[in-house]
Image (cartoon, rainbow, N blue to C red):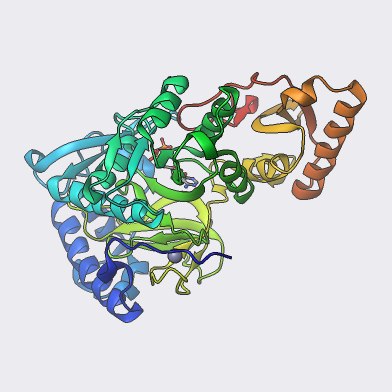
Length: 439
Ligand code: ADP
Ligand code: ZN
């Protein structure tokens, strides 16, 4: 196999020895805790309640004594209660969609924006982006962090940015072709949609486009989906992770080895905890990801519970980076569906669907309760060819999917093959579940 050339944006910070990094993290943690205690009444009260004083925190080892922060804290302190600096030092706010309740916002100082840009520059560089590249940003620009994050990172590298934002897929493709975009930034579900539309327009990505890599994230996706996108667009597809509360995209990113996401550990400390007890879990064990920011000024987050599930891998990577890698997110504790007592993640269903010929990876899970028992319908789109195939062949595929889901997830579902393009497409984060039990 051809050997990959790994580009690294900040060699010093991304490749330092483990000991050096722990030292740096400890120093920055001590400062952050002091800053937070002195400036954020909510967190001071929480530390006081737990009997922890700022001077008790002397190194990263002491992190476990600190109280957690939660999304509800951001809501309760809406809008500016968690600011750790005077409001006039805040130069930008971003917010998360708030599809499940009250929106939340995060405030950035000039330096916070600088740090975030650096993280995104590292992210894009790891996917192969350099000053000669043309970065096509189809993440939305707005309160959502995706668009601005990708723009800032590309700008820091000195690449050319096309700030397309989301929407108007045909126009996106026209620009991509005419301007020769080389790096694509969008959600994985939109990358799939773009790939299909490119082909419908009679274009061949390998012949007509110059795309070489993509940074795809903001929503859960699977390894199977990665292969699918790489094939569809003829590119390297790299996972990118982040959340508004911590800064936005770029908290961690995959390099071209595509074996987990490197965490920007000079700016954040990651822990994995048991979501039920709050106890720290060792490397390799799967649990809830928790982040502590150690350079953020505006709204520092200490032991912020993300509800995202993954594990951490400390082994050095073939790319030369020494940072701890997090595995792909397998789901969110709050996305997990409990169907007749069995835990089901949409990603499990996706991994089955992507491997079945005749269906497209566009699906919707419809959960309901009938006669006090949970039901789940899996709606999945057929490809055009499948749609015009015989009824008996369609039924055969439907049965195969039902059996595979049963063997992966352990429950019986009602699989329904639907017409091509009948499941709504998303320009941002895909919606995969309709849970009627919650209505
Ligand atoms: P919202 O909570 O409204 O979705 P954000 O845009 O801040 O707000 O989204 C952050 C969340 O998106 C993360 O906590 C995680 O659940 C999800 N996410 C982001 N990137 C990825 C990724 N690469 N893989 C899986 N999930 C991701
Ligand atoms: Zn790597």
